[in-house]
Length: 251
Image (cartoon, rainbow, N blue to C red; front, side, top):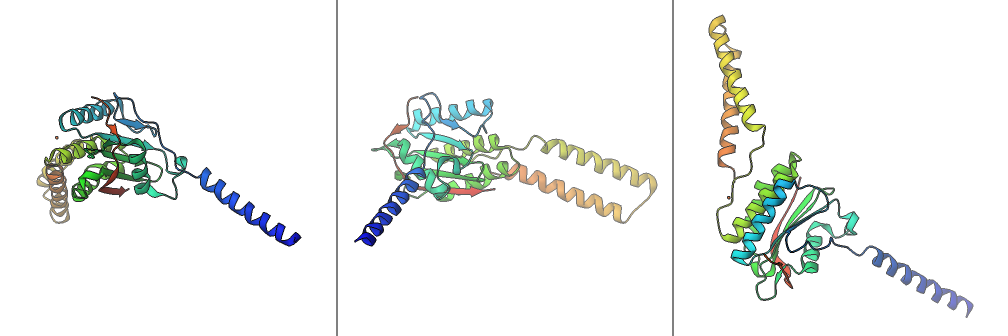
């Protein structure tokens, strides 16, 4: 009898501990933005200039197409008790928690960036019906991730919002923002090639120097080619739900 009581007490204690652990690890979410904002930047990644642009794009999209678009940045999934969920599951849970979109028009869009986990997710409302996963992947891989890799998070986010806006409107995806240092590097390279050629004509040298000029010219050509061809109110919370696809990226 005494042993049975101990056994029952031990089992009860185990279930209690499991319940407490599961409860303490339940995922939490940032508060919804106000009606004037379409982003929650808890990780402080978005510059004031880009924050204004995100709001302007999302506000126009909601007004003209009835498609709500929101951006959320977090420092890490661990901070929100979602380390075991992963970025995809957490984005779905956040989407549903906020109710992005509307029950009768479930076309919400959400971009979640977890800077500590180096992951981002585009999540789409259920009515998108997984028909735009490829476009979402292109937005992620051509507009968002390249900027994130050079730690320019603000540019990556605003370019991603531009791409999601084009996706929602059925337009061609915009080109990514060229880094500020791109054209100075190109100009410096051209000046260097001109000076090198001028010096070679003066000294009469040949061989490896001309090969170096050819190599630099090819590098500049492909830099220019890449730049020219790379991928322009009210509340949006109305009981919408996720499940319409999207895309995940890491850097």
